[in-house]
Amino acid sequence: MNHYETEAMWQLFKKAGYERTDFETNADVYVINTCTVTNTGDKKSRQIIRRAVRQNPDAVVCVTGCYAQTSPGEILEIPGVDVVVGTQDRTKMLGYIEQYLKERKPVNAVKNIMKNRVYEEMEVPYFTDRHRASLKIQEGCNNFCTFCIIPWARGLMRSRDPEKVIAQAQKLVNAGYKELVLTGIHTGGYGQDLKDYNLAMLLKDLEEKVQGLKRVRISSIEASQLTDEVIDVIKHSKVVVRHMHVPIQSGSDTVLKRMRRKYTMDQFAERITKLKEALPDLALTSDVIVGFPGETEEEFMETYNFIKEHRFAELHVFPYSPRTGTPAARMKDQIDEEIKNERVHRMIALSDQLAKEYASQFENEVLEVIPEEPFKEDPESGLYEGYTDNYLKVVFPATPDMVGKLVKVKITKAGYPYNEAQFVRVMDDVMPAVNEAM
Ligand code: SF4
Image (cartoon, rainbow, N blue to C red; front, side):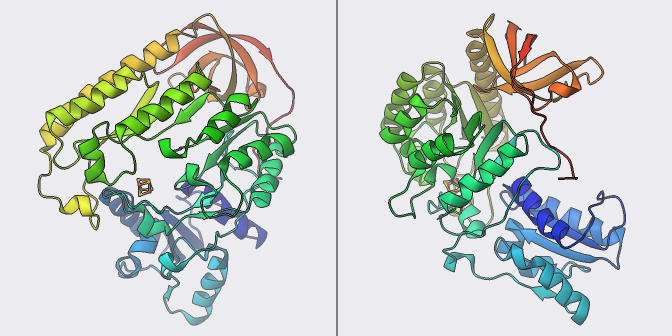
């Protein structure tokens, strides 16, 4: 989300005639888009703000994003910060910067996000540094899980106007992107605040109305949002990929209750079983928080066994970290760091094993990959890396002109974190337009 919004803000500056420079180069204006999801996010944001001030003490330093929204006072106390804009009114940012240049008085433009019911429209017609495009479709979240600060930083659920989503998607496809990743704070909740329109309808409209669109990936969807209607659309779609990221967080009903998650494990299992019946080759990935306050060994094992039994394709494992200001951070029975780490290691080992098992089904199969960049482990090798629709990372011999295109490859050696493959053929010849000249 932050990457998407940084691009959107850059578009505003570009239209006003600004040039973009490296962070290390002296600039007249620094915009720092901050994160607040963990306490570390705040700390890192403060470090980078101080670095910008040191770099050019005469520059205008403007701080925006989630940390700016939740703690504008704290940020304005950092010497050298001139403008603070939260997670709304970013379209007015240039005006605030001009106001500061005229009046030379700090500008605090942060307002109460909880009162905002309107999606702030900001365009991203292309990305300056990526071959996979994200497309923001909603903002905010109504869930208030006990470990999470995000609703306070982003406000309540607001969906983007479907016509604007389609128009933005068409622009990105015209710019050469084959894959769009639908992004948001609570992406799968798209449409909850709209009348007579929902996520299933958006997926259908994207497929029917966006000319040349090859792949749509949903960045994250809750089990409860995998309605029969959504599953049916995905089953029959030629563009929605065989990969769903469904956050589980815990596989224990008692922990889920303390987390204030809105499902039981029976409900979760019922939904993913239905999804897998519709898409037998599906890659099901998930987020897991390990060591939530009060988590017993039995509760941890409930999560472990559930994940093993349902054969997730990969997990993002997070050791629970108390976020100041959330109910979970105030819970008494915080888990000892050593126990947390030991459980994290067990969960990661399980994830690695499941990922290998999932990938092994595809050995000797021909799959479509979008190569994104030279193989990071050995950039001079002539190998490139990219993802298949079912989220297998694939490494294969390629040429720079293939980057961003759909390429058929044969998996020769399945594995994790990557699969080795042989080039078969390029599917199309349109170049992705990742450049500043557009
Ligand atoms: S669903 Fe829960 S974890 Fe996700 S953004 Fe909302 S409050 Fe945070």
